[in-house]
Length: 379
Image 1: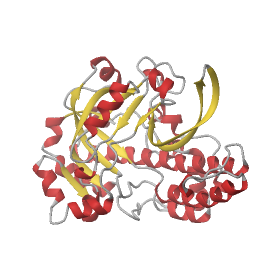
Image 2: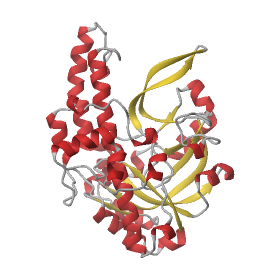
Image 3: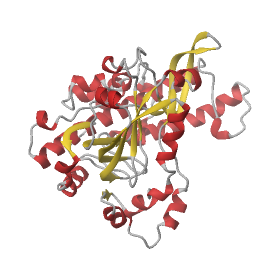
């Protein structure tokens, strides 16, 4: 999200803002909103409707939908293919950040690499931005667990040799393949609704802390893009257009200018691409390219990637106060537990600057702006 606020306007209130975001947006393992109660049928509607469900209940605007991949709802979702256990896990977690590498980050535009593209996205130097990273929570995790067992059996049934059991799979058009895609669409729609609600609470929190009108704050969604998802798309392969299933695991979509699936206002520049780094360095906004369509099925990276396991990070952070270290660097961090901050230390990740340079020079997404964190809430 972009705002109408400058870095200097927010800097003096950043502690208040981070504390308020932490109160208003539940984070951490097992987090839930006490004031949001979903029954089974309402949860099934979330899985059908995605971000549209959130809008119908007052969480956001129609303009938001225009800036969400698939307008916030993937077709073909069938809640009957989601287990009771998955539904149970998700019911209390809608509208929460969760744990691990998920976060809500308030930052500012530290550098602009392409003035024209930045202007088209509504970005300017020293402008305050908000980056949200979260997904389908326990519901999506359970859908994955449930279908791994299905796919293991399917691989044997269709005589697919697996180099690793974690690569278990089934033909897309098989009953198992179709069922999984429908269940995965449910999880994706849950994630769209989840982020839409968090977007709404970010806006409310800014209004609460700064006592300014929504119009004055001008908190607009630039884009909401998925990663860790499989999508049925049309791509040109050896000169022939084909419908294929593109798996973006550890990847995000990077469609070029004039692609029919990106918002009308971005048709001339291409799809916004969001690449977070870590809570101590920076993140990037890039733009999709035609070269990505030619070389990587319209995809680019989705983050810095870890260089340490969580266990190694805990060991490396022994005896350190991560929150104090970050505050000394001008970044206020609030986590649901010390363990999460320790697991997510900046040292545990590759340098996002180097990662982004690679995809930029490869031409599969192009740098627009660099965002530096001011305050972060973590699970």
